[in-house]
Image 1 (cartoon, rainbow, N blue to C red):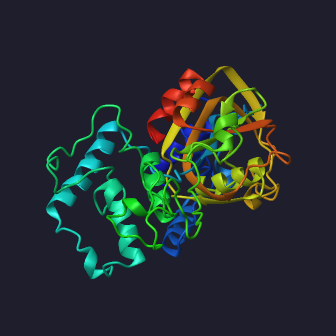
Image 2: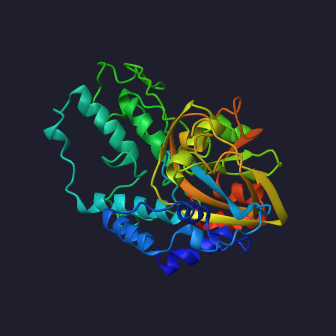
Length: 387
């Protein structure tokens, strides 16, 4: 053993300030394995020394050993649900996309309907009826004629709802159902360019006849029932944002699920165990990496004397491991390391929570800021996604 290791072991055995972490203390407190060459050198050194009877050994007095000093090491998984929908477009983006669509109508070749519809057929008559109303072949650019006198005027005015996603969806559905994309006056046979389909030009006057009623299923709304009820326990809310799981611990503070690291488990293993013991097994989760994405340090007002206990899911923390079970430690605070995790399916269940957590919430970033303390927020705000 060289002088450096002897000094390190002397520091470990002393009762001074906590200048070394738990892992290093455990590693230095055990004798390293000796190789053959080292063992032979030690044997020669012992053979050259005088017998123990000829040397005076100083036996120090037995004194009470003080508890070790350290910080409480915590693993805290940051479980999140990623966005399920794209974000809503800004007003500028809506107007820009509509402008691009109308510009494409101006640059594209005119639609040749006689290639698809034979003149005088019902399909040709239906095409003329739609073209008379919307003035173009496109279904989602509003009432606009790219080859008319107003073809250059392809920008919408302030307050126009043509570029709104709801208006575009409504126009597409109305067209799929055989209706006009905009409401107009009733159309009869006499208004179809003089071409009477029924034989009598006055038969269809004043009414709109539907040959086949088609109902197209509308897309699901972006605003769900959980959004209207502000149900923070539901994952079916804020579908275009990232939601994070927070639990209310036995001290009454909202934090990410957390627990101390036991035995020889690493942060990844500890985070997986915390999710099971805090939120149940009814969740399909994925720990993204082995390295923490952030940390939080909290110092107690005065040191706390705690006794390390074993965890039933950590074999290396049982009583069989010497120096771990039942050891008293004077802890000066907490050091929590955050591990990124994703929920794929399921829901949190605190009915069998082993840490005393009473409630849970799925919150967006600005909602997390309102729930946690100022010091905790300063440690986690840069690792949470804006959306």
